[in-house]
Each structure stands twice: as C-alpha cells, then as structure tokens.
Length: 571
Image 1 (cartoon, rainbow, N blue to C red):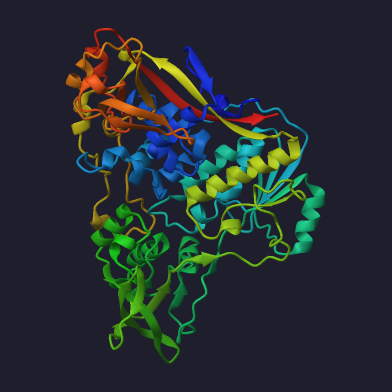
Image 2: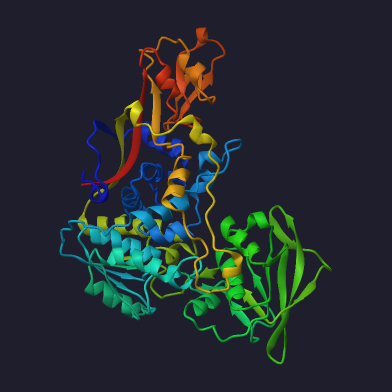
C-alpha cells in the first residue's frame, strides 16, 4: 500500500500510534464522528476545529484544503450536511456547532500557499468544466503527478461558484483564491473553450491519457406554463448568471415573484431586492421546513423584507402586450408529503417579473449515456463523467465528492493500482492533551456577524462578515471533539464505579450480553446491578470528552485515543 496525499498537507505529530483496517475501528469513525460521516468528502471536522481551538488556524486551513479543496468558498456556501448530524444539536444539548463558519475562519486566518513536492508521472489528463467537481478532480490528479488541463466554456473558472451564486454570499475574489490554490499545483485552465460534440470528445480522448467530463447542470428543469414567453419571465439560474455578469443592471424591477424553495430561488429574491424591486414574493409548493435552502439564507431573506407564500404552485403567467403582469397560483395541501392542488383555490399576484427557480438539468451530449458507472470494473476506455453531469443537479460539496471519486477511478485506470482502502490511525492521548472541560458544554452558539440591512442594497457587498479569531475559538470550544475514543480496560477495572459517579452525563454504563455485529457495531444490554455486569463501557456517542472519568479512576484503566481516517492506495 502507498499513502495518499494527506501527509503532504498536514504533518503528523510524533506520537506512538497504531494503524488499523479492522471493521470495528472503521465503524467507530462513522458512528462516533457523525459530522464527518455526514460530509460527502468526509472532512476531518473535529481535527480542524481542534486546531482552531488551539489557535492554529494554518493547520485548520490545511486540513480543509486537503479534504474539501475549497475552504474559502465552502466556508460560505456549503449546504452544511454536517451540522444537522452534530451531536451538540441533539435534544437538550443546544444548537449544532457552527462547523461551516469555522471552516471559513480557517481560510480567513489560516490561508497559506501550498508548497508540495509533486513528482510528474508523464501522463496528461483533460478535465472539461471548471466547476467544483472538475476542479476537485484536477486538484487530486495534479497532486498525483498528472499534467492536467481544464477546459472551461465561460470567461472565468469556478462554475456555479462563480456564476450561480451572488457576490453578497460569495465574492469573486474568494472563489479566485480557491481556484488559484489549484492552479498553483500546475493545473492549466483554458477559458472560453466549449466542448459540445462527440467528435470533440473523441479528439480529446486521443490527445490525452484520460478525459473527465464534468460540466454542470445549466439547463432549466422541464416545465411549461402559459405565458412563459412574455417579457419579464426568467429562469432562475439564467437570472443569476446574468446578474453575476452585470447584465441586469439596467432593468427596472418593481414587483417580483420567485418560484422555488432552494438556494437559487432564495438568491433570486435577494438579488431582486438589490436590483431595486419594491415587492418580492417567494412562492413555494411545500412548507417552509421543506425548503432546501439553508436556514441562514432564509433568515437573511426575511430580514430583507421578502414575503413568502407556502403551499402554492404556479398555474399561468399573466401578460399584456407581451409583458408579464402577474402570475396565477393555486393553493396546495400535502398528501403523503406530496403537494396536491386544492380545487377552486386559485389566486393572482400582480407582478412585472416572474423567476422560475425550480432546479436544473444537464445537457444531452451525444456519446455520454454509455459511460459506465464510476465503480464499474474494468473501465472500458479513458473517458469519465463527474459531478452534476453524471448525477444530476446537486450541492457544491456533493460535486466535490464526486470529482474526488472519479479522480481516484481515473488514477486507478491510469496507474494500474488495485484500488483503495480505508486505514484508521489510532494515537494515544494523555489527559493533559485533552482541551475540553465540562464548562464548554454551556457556551451558546456564536452568532455570525452581518452587515446591517440598511447597507444591503449594495449588490455585491458580502452580508456575512465572518468570525473574528476570538469568536472562532470561542465557537470551537463547543465542539465535543468526537474523534477522541475513551475506553475502559476491563482486565484492570476493579468495578469501583468511581467513573460513573464522576460522569456529568449518562455516558458510562454497566453492561451485559455484549455482542459485536457483523458490521462492527457493538451491542449490549445495560445491567441494573454491578453483580450481573460483564463490563463497564463508555458510550462515546454520549461522551462529552471532559476527562472526568479518567481523573476519577483509581487504577488508571481508562485510556484516550484519537481516531483519524486515511484512504490509501492498494498496489
């Protein structure tokens, strides 16, 4: 086995540690570090949060840069699947840790240019599309020594990061900083290069050792309503792309209705506000809690005075003399989670612009439908699909994850390695190295600072101003640091139960009927009395990593280990 690039980014401390491929240890990662398991790229969340806690923002940035490639951008616009999974957000424990805001802090205060020793391998790869998936694949392959050329159809790289998200959420210079860290690895990006035919792809396949097609989903989802040809009707992504290319500065918006419940829909409402619209309504076919847009973005939208209509669907765009004058909607009720129109409930909202932001799909490029799935073996030829083009419209972090998956598949195809294997590193930790205290559990969520609403009419001014170093470290203190594993050595335990008396939460149990499942899961029954107990066990899913049990143990039978995950190549 040969290691991946992890050590190139973050130097490992000199501690005695073990490496394990045991299913129990791998299962422990997924069960006990839920934020990491929920992240599509398996970012080492507690690793970088602990670095911030210790004031080492540079290491925090390097961990993020290694795992998710776009720390500056994702620290602002990630849809944050890690946060609902955070143990701190469970009932009675407060709000989830602001993982995404801390990612941004790592980039704001810890950015440092990468200085990697890359050995060229003599092979060339072409990536079509400079969005998150394509750039992640380019990044990972460049680190492996490939000469990577990225072809991008627009004026600037970044894909949806650059053209689909407004600057008040994601400034252009922030995207540019993430892109530069990739081109610094030797990746060449050629803009205004559109690939739209099977013949062009065949030429690239002959010129390069591998070709990865990673164009995004740029076409609107198929929907047809009367009146959609009227002046004042826009597709959501088209509206955002025109706004981001400064092509809408001269239009006069007054009353706007936006259809949809995702990030693009919310961005369209907030962009309309900055373009001078006086009345803006978001109309969504389900309820507010079903919106896929992030809660912080929805909160900002409400602060900016955007009205919302829920459980409504569009029926017809109304027009006069070829111009939009309103939209007819029908009210819905939910039946088994699906919106169903209520007969006789139609109503009209007067408006001069309707923006349909209900999702996108990819282009139907000839020759791409027969490409095998990424895990199909053997790979038929040197052509691969990645990101939204392969999976349909998704989030930025999902695109990054797929770009990495396809890059690994391409590397396997070109290098001849057998595949990849997860390895768990287990490091012994002393009690005085544990940074948490019980008092950290009671720190409230650190609010992200914003500019005042009165200053938000400036179209390109970023609304979220970011944590200070002090705020970031304060928020980092809330993290349970779930990568620490507390274990009791049963052979040394004297069953005095001092640890149970010392625990501030119900995380240490007398256990009986202990069993290990085929998937590595540990099952047991809580024993009511110590006489029937077969062991005393620490439930790391409830443990708050305060160390009280270790301090209380008279025979020093409780150990602390730090678990980290690495993917290695199998030769």
